Image 1 (cartoon, helix red, strand yellow):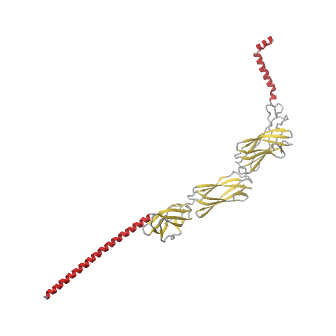
Image 2: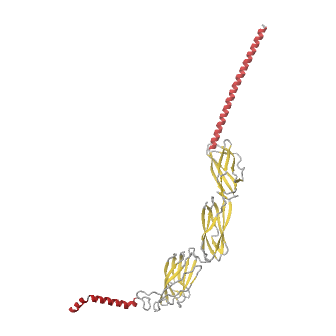
Image 3: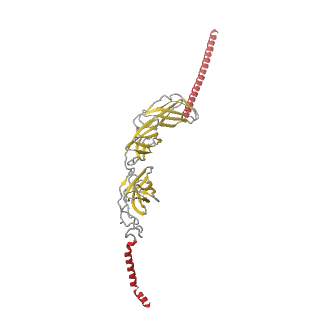
Length: 452
């Protein structure tokens, strides 16, 4: 009985051990299943978060890039400004913004290392201080900024490095400058660069010369474009004018100079009045002088006036004759009245102005002693004019004149002048014609005579 009891106890103990082991095993299996399920859920959540972050980053783009200056001189400082915009509906975290290129020295490389959050619809601006290194050329530095939850944004930037300076010249000037008279000079500035130039200031200077205006400001000169700036120069002797041109490329100052030599002489492009076709008529105690004035120059003669000078004395009704504006290669007639005791010395004075308002004059001394005068019987012929006297940088051309022409009916003519000198010939022709008519009508005339 004892043996059976012991065996029964052993069997019961083994059954109990098996039951506990089975329970433990079942619990472990259940726990393992729960762990596997939890791991799978964590992996799914992580993948979903990554996709959301990448989707949010895809809505951020580079909206603006500005380089100032637009074209760098070698070793010149400037700025590069980059803007990124979030067009999505979620905030995106960014850090470590930088510009990468061996041809640029970034002077604030650690300015944007910290984390920033770019909200929906917002824009972030990054400004980098840079120095352009030679050689010349066009480079593409890389802008890069990293997001916290996804990848990064990488964007190439165009940067030009060019050493060409502005080109200066004189676009317009006279061949020679008249003394103490104003002339127009145009200073030409050409920008050969790929970028715009700003704040251009042109300042002229010189001794023994007046220049107007004293300073000119030009806001901008576009890339590969010229500008012309007019100046009025009045020299008081041979000298030179120095033009100082200061400008900015970005925030960098540059200066260059242009020198213009000033040589005093006759302006070959000016007006040149010439007097000809002179005719003289006596009017008692005075004379009437008529003629033509021709502009043999290149420019127009404005406010042109003709009169006589001392010792001749201008009298009415035409003491001086105003022609007005006389174009180049054009002419106009004039009429003057004067009194003079000596016809061998009659100064004819011509005054005019140019387009700048400068006044000029020329004097031609005439010898009118051999000119035909009303009421005299002197032989006709042209006298010899005196030499022209130059006036303020201009010379009048040589003048020719004639005596008062004999009219068809003898008005103003001298001996043998007019139609009277042809009366013998005319009478002979009339007699000849009458003879021919009578010869042809002789029979008819004879019959008439017999009847009578």
